[in-house]
Image (cartoon, rainbow, N blue to C red):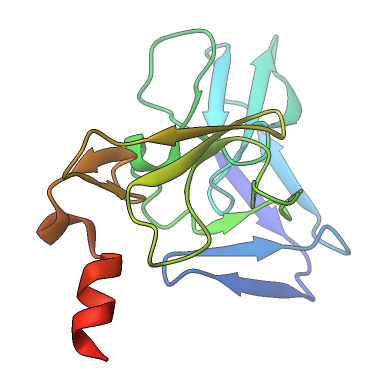
Length: 162
């Protein structure tokens, strides 16, 4: 797998682990391996190449999902907490709306004091979900966990600290 990058002129940092690539002037040439299949982009975690008969077709996972080269299924795009992107730290620009910072994914309530509510966004449509009593949503694992594991403050803890 050979990639030649001619120019990258602009990127925006997002979270400590991922950044966003603006498609302004990124030109890469991907050479397919001999075997047909889907192959990850070496830089961008949500971009991959579909190789058939030596011809590469560049593809993007839906906004909010990333490409998992280890997944043996046909659809290899998955939630970021299920995929180790390694050095592939860049992402497509987000397509946010009111409750979904990206079109797909699990996202915490925007009010940090509301720890037990999160949104499941599918193609930009949000469904509000409440964790089981006593649990908090952990955005890094995408599940409800005990409060000390979720890295969020509970409303009562905020009131006590005032």
